[in-house]
Amino acid sequence: MPDLLDAVEIETAKHPTASVIWLHGLGADGNDFVPIVGELRLPPAAIRFVFPHAPVQPVTINGGMRMRAWYDIKDGAIRREDESGVRASQRLVEKLMAREKQRGTPAARLVLAGFSQGGAIALQTGLRHPERIAGIMALSTYLPIADKLPAEASALNRDVPIFMAHGTQDPVVVLERALQSREILASLGYAPQWHEYAMPHSVCAEEIGDIGAWLGRVLGG
Image (cartoon, rainbow, N blue to C red; front, side, top):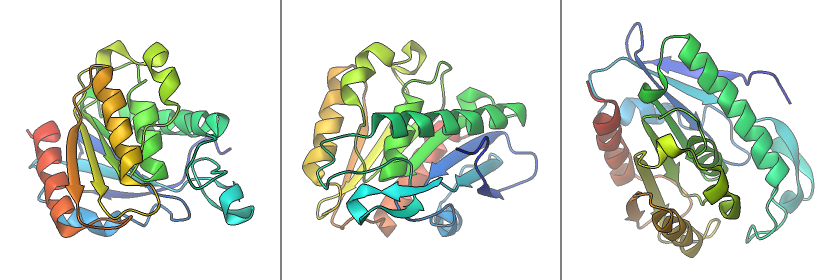
């Protein structure tokens, strides 16, 4: 595993005072969500968007083909979770968060975001981070290693803003899996803001508008 992941970076203005670390899905790379930044109606704050490239590794469900992935997936229903892979990527994201703090973004001005696998890692990392962060954005995803969260959750992020969004026609991460994750979070005292869209495993214009509004609330000013 690399010490620090390579990433595409966009700054909305000089001297950023907030950061969004946005993790792509399986087989994509950090360029995947770069075009969305220009479509967000962002708050006036200077924000640094960091789009890291996941490590290249074999993925069982794709015949062992090597591709960018945050962890291995052994079956379509994701019943057998790659806990060691999830935790390895959590450590990589923690290093990116530490660099943002070194560059002047306090934890309270940092958002973790991700799509599909990336969203799972955003939840895994953000809910366990020892400092209060600004928010977690989990798109078309689910809560990984859910059974370990009660013992590992960070007390300071119990009330962290969580944006969860999912497509009602998603054949990859089925809606029921995401709804189950939402219910688990709610049972543990979290209050995820839930959004559904008539789309498959993707992102739509209405969702992008909602993401921009949410970022404005958690990073505004």
